[in-house]
Length: 152
Image 1 (cartoon, helix red, strand yellow):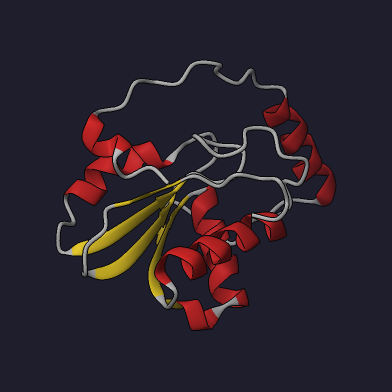
Image 2 (spheres, rainbow, N blue to C red):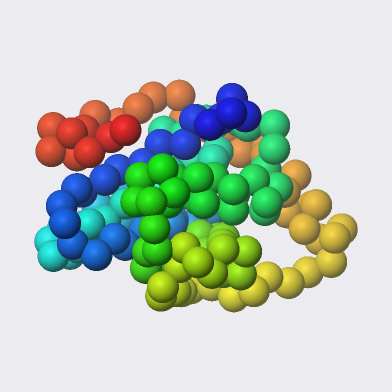
């Protein structure tokens, strides 16, 4: 990406209908490896959202627009057309924003444990400060070869 942010994704490959899955806050794409394994007839793309997983861990821009732009970029670059977009928790909120901004790229929207968001600006800022205070793990968990083969 042109912003200096690396967005990591896992692509199962194949000719099936594309399904893009977005994890929740403090999660990673790895949470959905069992889901991807259970969908052999689909091409699953699991995205590590910015600040998570193997994507850039401390990007300067953590705006909702930046998350949306990242997902749109991956969909266009990897699939090139419309997808079923699945989002869990924060990933669900991002998925709703992607569908609203780029309905041409989303044929179906699946939401898990999510909602449209709430809270005042002050409450949201306080929550952001809380999450920014978390220590980030410095080690990378060793992944099985079949999963590493999907990393781009």
